[in-house]
Length: 413
Figure 1 (cartoon, one colour):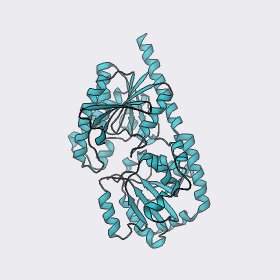
Figure 2 (cartoon, rainbow, N blue to C red; figure 1 turned 90 degrees about the vertical axis):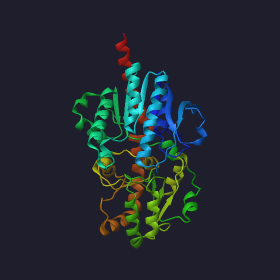
Figure 3 (cartoon, rainbow, N blue to C red; figure 1 turned 120 degrees about the vertical axis):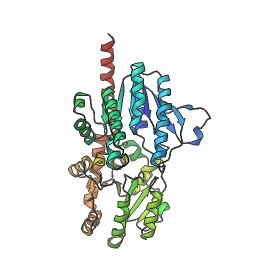
């Protein structure tokens, strides 16, 4: 059986970015499926002059179209890239033979080529929902035009309805779908959270190495790592404010922020102006996924942040799962399903939406509680292995694929 894997931002572990699709695709190969990936790249090395280039790597066949894309692009620049990829990927996917299409958002438009593949070639597709879009985009004010909102909601429902199965990445996402679209309640909807890649984060570091000290000049008492995007929804301004408060109470707590994004320059400027940059907060360039385990090993805690918009609490950010895979406690500043898991499983610390002196003092005490943090490290690793490991996600997907192929065979009899 052949799977056509449609993901606009597919990444290998030696690149910067999330590797969920790579991890799943290689696992599918191990189960005996053939997998071809359709994606875009901004790597100039893939700019062959042709519309598409094809490589075979790690057993995967990957089709690339060259479309320069950066996290610091404006909303409209990114929109142009989205629609270009929609057009080019539709033509490519219609030229490929496959038994099933797995389309993973974002953006929502990634579902259109899969939809057309179904209509023209009767190829069923599974739609993986990484973000509730356009709901989240509307909530943060990115899409204000009422007519456009209605069109996007119509497109969302059409894609969900036509998909043979839906895979939201959190229980909150699933709840959003069935609440807004009650007619979909009977459709197969399987929650498969983001992946904690245990092997990568437990075996990808060297105990004797010290990358962190080289990057910031010293080894802090307590280090919190943020490895992700500096975008509007990530709310890293919150971390700057927290660092400003903490430096007067306990300067031995240090934030190391790694990544790129449209907000990065402003954040560096603010941290420098507030005199915390390169003191208790360090803002560094992004690293490849394969280099992250070393940094997580050397830090005491991982983190994930979002702006105070309820619709964003449903997220299933890589940062959360990478932290657990590394066996470290997770720090967040929002509610929702992740807060519930943190409290239930005792795997981290939940900050309030509004920073105040009392919470700062409480967090300092938490950072000094070595027995609690040791226990949380063990809990984090255990929950990652039990609920979020790659094998767990692969088995869930394999169950979906088997059911689809069984139904197709019945229809053809």
